[in-house]
Length: 292
Image (tube, rainbow, N blue to C red; front, top):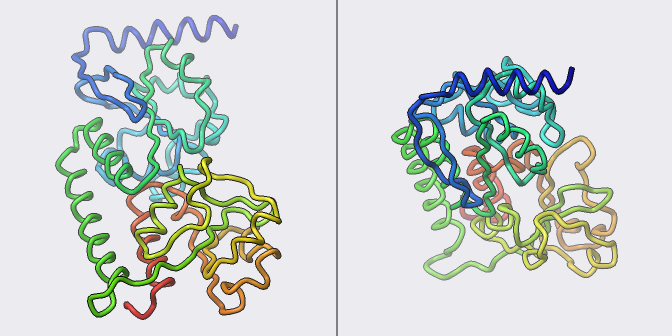
């Protein structure tokens, strides 16, 4: 029965896409992907990608999203295909999407071959900085035929970031001292951000420096001994139910002693989408209140 399901779905999908004019796009891994001139059915497997699709005006063409895709509100009405880590492949194929959007920041890619075997294209994004988030917006705008809208969004975000950096980097014409920051993703076990995380770039643009910016992984787990030696001046918490206080190892740090512990909504700070600039603005105000 399982084999018949896949065979039938493949036949139907191929029939739907036969003789449809296509165009070529390139994802963040450099893969060439042939998609229809008009994308009418898509599935998003990450909340940030769902947000971008809606932002550029393609939300009405999403036929499937994950259980974590809660923004904007309209996304909650779209059929769910599982979570970000373990999406239900059968459900995805049954929806007959022309393209599936994937974020490598939160997902494994072992299902890619299964989807492509059904003539469903897989587009991978992998931003590790703010400029890459802009590129994701631009590419997704291109996929949905909304280039102009995507460029408008990027222009607006770039203006906000440019103004912010003027405020946070200068005091009376002199460069400000960067605040030494620890970003706590999880309290127990203790996870933070490393060189490959877009949040490292975000901290820098907010007038700080991540104390773990040279750690190779995107989201490394730290030992208590390593964390103790960091001695941060400020701590940024990805605010969630189990991550609302700094790890006990920081109890004698300047950040805790001086009340420089700041919380940013986890749904915003963890998603490389247009809303990330709002997180950047909040972090900049927290680190440099004198500039605002």
